[in-house]
Amino acid sequence: MGGYIVVSSITYAYKARDLLERKGCRVQVERAPKDLSRCGCHFLVLIRNYPLQQAVAILDAAHIRIIKSGGDHYGVSG
Image (cartoon, rainbow, N blue to C red):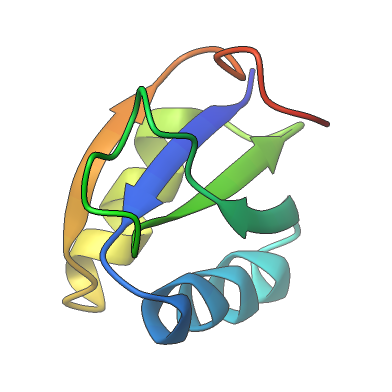
């Protein structure tokens, strides 16, 4: 369980964090590494102890644009 979700801005990352934490998900926000985001402005929402697909569905319902998601932490801290 867990993984990462890449969103387009720090604002969306914090909104995602707040939504998911209210659902009982442990979340950490950090800047997306360059191999996940060439833009430099994208942020990771790291998910722990929560099904990734369920987290994605919650963010989709809240109209938070997801750039990319994956089922592991992709070599980032956490």
